[in-house]
Image: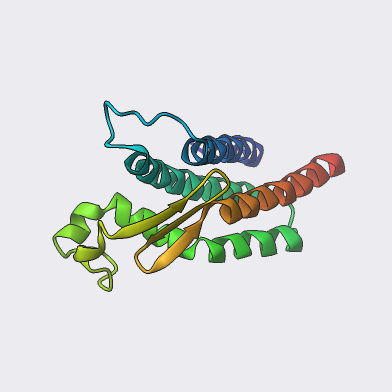
Length: 169
């Protein structure tokens, strides 16, 4: 079924907003001091590791939704630059998400990125406090608060372009 451009724009915008909220939800779970789900996890750090992986999934879904929605807006150089910059910023997060998603392939030596050694799958470090998280894995560090700022800036730029397009119709 072929959907109208307006339908694709509206649904992808809605999905982007949903995934931005998911990012904030995971940020809060990671940073806000809370009781670990001790019936499931060995402690707060193990729970935060799981939350980081869910954050990465939400991050890439957010990016894909904004990028798709922008394709259905009139050309906007500033929005395009912001999307391209966000895409570039996501580089290592994409690797982290992909390795996490396909850990089974990496564990048996069949991962797409042959530079990833299966021995590194569970070798990571985390610097967590109530204001930020640094998650180092696969030779890179993920800064939670910077990622949230980048996502919020992209959303603001997208909404500006979206509202300008709506006002012009």
